[in-house]
Length: 303
Image (cartoon, rainbow, N blue to C red):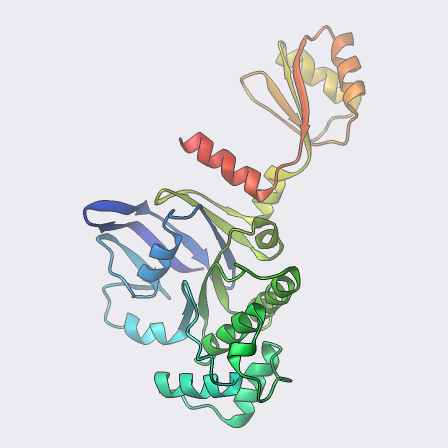
């Protein structure tokens, strides 16, 4: 089941189209990795979905309700977002920030619930320390604690790993996995640190210049990015038969004369095999794509 869907969603500013007929599908209980360059439209889409901006045209659905359905305002109670920067008060402690946020939202927690929130984000042992003395990683975790005050089912995070050191990134990564797997929170997260996104995302949306290039599951992406040996030949039929005799079982044939082999075969064995079969080898190379490589290739193909 999709918790969020968009249908031909568009947004214009000063007659410039910045979100261009976007169709997205975010499954319930997923971590949706939102990948795109600066200015690609990620933040604008988050602002639209959280109700901070209105679409120019098109629609979206949250929890099965369309954006023009009055009942959607009640459903927004189950959404939390950290878009662009978190609003923290530097002169207050972590717990005082939570109390202030309760006043702002009209939600009242018990002292035990506040302690549970701070424990969940690993800020339970800093009683009395002011936020102005927090590291960036601690600030991000406190921001997430505030986002959890309303016990959300859906969370939007816009570049939460920006500026974090490796330890801070690892702590945030583990926290998001816990929130998703233990608490069942669906997370839409954008990040430029794609190597980290690979470790947590269950599906992806790739966007460029306001257009969705592709949506893909993590398993499908892993399949496409796995290590392979690409050979380009003049005679596909002969080459395929020869490679099967060599032991190739997992491969894909393209009409342009390319064969992508996923079996663990040595390059020299493939060369000898094809030569013996009378197949001219026009090119051969080994590759293993990262998420970043995959995205950049999508952008090039789109252009």
